[in-house]
Length: 90
Image 1 (tube, rainbow, N blue to C red):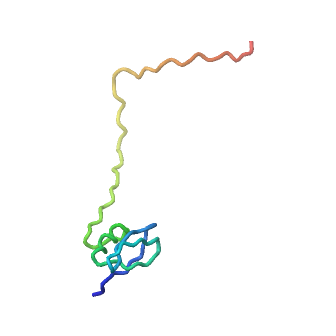
Image 2 (cartoon, rainbow, N blue to C red):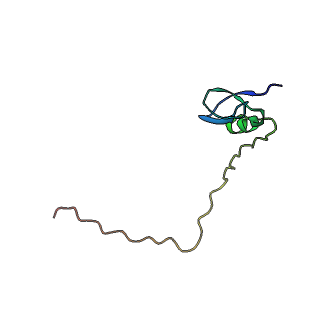
Image 3 (tube, helix red, strand yellow):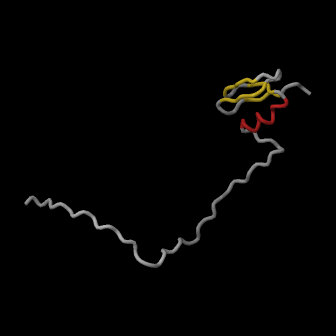
């Protein structure tokens, strides 16, 4: 078994621990060598799914069959608007 795992940074930037135990930073597209103890964290944050982490199922909203009826009771009162200006010229 090797003393590191090679990974590719998929997000904009990623911090990780190299095989010597030093914190490093890689930019998107960079191929980096990750310490074995840091591989799980790197994969989780980098967006790579792993076999032992269950992926959540997408939630689909249920369509509404009928719109909700208007509540019965007093109608909504509205404030009267301002009187319109007379623009007839005169």
